[in-house]
Image (cartoon, rainbow, N blue to C red):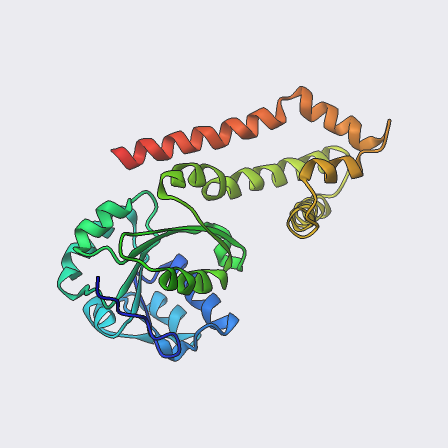
Length: 275
């Protein structure tokens, strides 16, 4: 197989689709210094979307075809139901010299590769906290994607959070956990704040405390290296307030409910990908 290395010092990054996810990735790449905005290009007819990208220096071209021609790495950031049609339309331009990336949820590598008529493809699943630079992303490599390609994509998506590599067969479970997970946590934050209000706190203070508490706990879980169970035990003194609260959560099936939510979302992801 003939290899076409991506020139790491000079490559251009193109986006097909200029929505919020593409904006999050592009702005993160620029903000982190991974690429200057002069090496990022996209195309969009909507003035609002054009202004969003131009605000941090990205070049806007007239057509998607122009973006493909002028890019070494192309990220397809379009809705899942249109990505195959977009690939088919642009197929004549998708040579093996280009590294193709899809962030379209639920669309499998084999379908992407078939539509593009090439397998130098990487599928990435980020999540909505990419908008604030805290994404949990997972990538899977297509048949012709190289280790060097994976390293390049890890660098790009590392600018908007953390990224892991996994077999594509795990992506439904990834969807159930990190894809849908932010909504579970938003629900938990809302419930914690409601509890604070019920206990007598002003709404604004309760919401601020709940949000910061979740952020702080997540930071401890990622930075201390301790198991979450150990961190929980460190807070729960014998006969104290925390263990009393934990007892109520256990009586309500808190852990099992969260586990069931992940499993249900994973199952639904599999159903949708097969439809």
